[in-house]
Length: 296
Figure 1: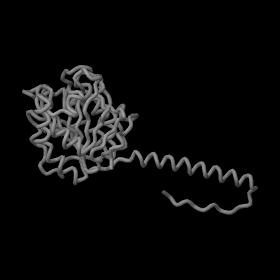
Figure 2: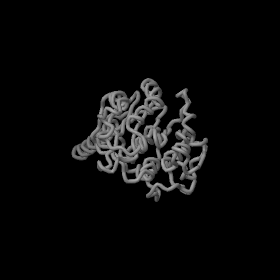
Figure 3: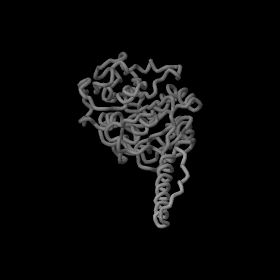
Figure 4: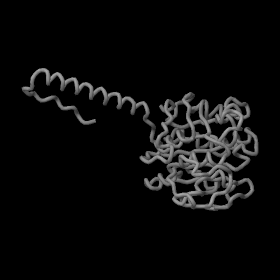
């Protein structure tokens, strides 16, 4: 903030001077309110953000469940729990597009997309335009950049980046390429487990164990290395009003915190964009609020 200069003396009439003082006081009041609001909404600036997206389970199926000990006893207990987090629609694919680009981009079902057919801004294109790094790590993807519709337990419907012409297919990596040296991670990355590991075809316990075994070491590292892990779901089981689990974990996440504010995929996207220091916001993320009350 620039230093406030002392008012210069002048010979204005007393009434005019009083009016000027009142106006100055009002201006300072407005500035103070703005500054306070900005401070309250301030987000950390992590070096790395990793987002893992799981499948088709309601909040009550995971949070508090004995089938998800890692998510509950480590990530939730040591991080933040959004108790009113919601998917936006059904089925899966539109939710992924909303989370990635702030819009379903006309996708209303789970059909495979025509690769590169969409040119709208999205999280990856914003990062690339800002000179920041991006990658997705996709379990069971046959090879880096593969645009296949499906292969074994891999499903393109959970990988919205393939729909965009402004996201290089080479940034879609296999999960085997997830670095063991976490300093080599991009600024922002998405992790998409396959149809079993993400709880779509297999149990909550299977997915919980997968996260612990494959991302647990990163989560531990993130706690002391200015980084964030976010765990969310695309949609619920169609029985709970689309209320889903969403957890944040990392060095600047207050351990054991929670927020009862209603959030959805657009809020998560907006928060990721702002954590990454982006000035652009894709689609409906532009009018969404950041997730607050969980940062230390």
